[in-house]
Structures are given as C-alpha cells and as structure tokens.
Length: 307
Image (cartoon, rainbow, N blue to C red):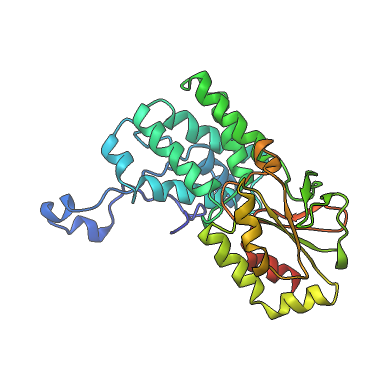
C-alpha cells in the first residue's frame, strides 16, 4: 500500500517524456490509475495542499463506472491512501469530517458503488485484524452515513446501532460494569474485582472458538505473563460470553489457576455492553477500570506491559 505525497503536484493523468515515446499500443495497455484531484498551483504550503487534497479527494472518481469501482487496484488503493492520510495523527477533526463527507457524498449516489465502498469501510476500519483498523475514523464514517438520504431507515438504524456500540468502552473511559459468576457459583461484578499491579487484562472468550484457543494458549505459554501474575503485577480476568455452560465448565481445567475465570451468562452479549465483533476480545484496564487499550491483539498488550 502507498500513500499520496500531497506536497507534490498531482501527476495523475499527465504524460511524461517517456510516456510520449510509447507506441499507441503501449499507451492502451496502461492500467487505470486513481484520478487524484489537481491541486491548484497557488497552494504552495504542504498543509494547504494536504487540506485541498483531502477535501476534494474523490472529486474526479466516477462512482457510476462499475468497472472502475470493481478495479480494486484503483478504488481500494485510493480508499487506503485516504484513510492513511486521515489517520496520520496530525489531521484535525474538521478536515477528517470534510474528507469523509467527500467520500460518502460520492459513493452513496450509486447503488453498486455504495455497496462496494460501504463493505470496504467495514473491512478496513472496523475489522480488528485490519492494519487500518481505526474506530475514530469508523465513527466519523458511521455518523455521516446515518444522515445519508440514499439509505432507508432500516439501514440507518443498523449503522446507528453500530455507532453506539463502537462508542462504548473507548480508551480513557471507564469500562462498562457487568456481573459474572465464578466456577464455585459465587457472583461478582467487574467493578468489584480487585486489580493487582494496577493492570488488568480483560479477555472475553469462548473455548470452542479456534482463534480464542490460539490466543489463550499464547497467553498461557508466556512465562513473562505468568511471572507477572504470580508476582501480583498483572491481573488476568477471562470471561466466557456464550450460553453453553457445560462447554465452559469442561474447559476450566485448562485455564491457569492464577487467573480469574468467570461466566457472564450472556449478559455482555444480550445487553450489547461490549463490542464483541471478533473473538477473543482483549482489553487492558487499570485498577479504576479505565480502558487503556481496547480490543487489541495480545502482542500489543504484552508490549504495553513491557513483558
């Protein structure tokens, strides 16, 4: 994947000296390129050029051209470049909103383009396994599409629910409290759970889920984590979120004795308390149950804890 260099004058569609020497047959073989907007020459400062580029990013893209939309080397690459620029950490919220509006205003006008690009936004911004996973951008996109006149009320309702779910348990907020049951049947809440070492790894899991098994095994094989838990530097709380209590109990002997193992009896899912879009779902909390990391791979937590 590449990122647009906004500090340079856009050359999309322009011929170079080498291009002019090509035969007509060679020119016809040139693959379609994303039609970046031409940045006015009067804009000389990098920030001005970046602002113009992001505000007009999709102006020259023909969303009614199904072949162009289906050409992922053009459409998907263009989308990836845009979100890479928006997620650079220095682009302001208003420019992000304007750029996302430019994208949505274009793609929502054509049924096929809308279907393709809405799925693309879901895959890239909302899938935790995506290298471009970004809830902040995803929420800007969702809030814009909820206002779309091209969608019916059922579609808008679905997007609004996703926005509400994605807004919960965000970094620097207090994790939503819930009740869970220990193997002996006693009841406890997340808020009541003591945190040793001011750090809790909260894991939502299902022992019958292959990816859960893989992640849990990775954690159990990690001697650095085991030592940190033994020394009281980290607390691990693993919560079963499904409805098969027999499956949960059958897997209990495989779980570490120094972890807190609980069964929420479907409370988290039934009340949509956490966004469990992929399992397992891992959070890092502090002793006050403030979210430090949300829905991240175990490697990210391990790195943050310095294990």
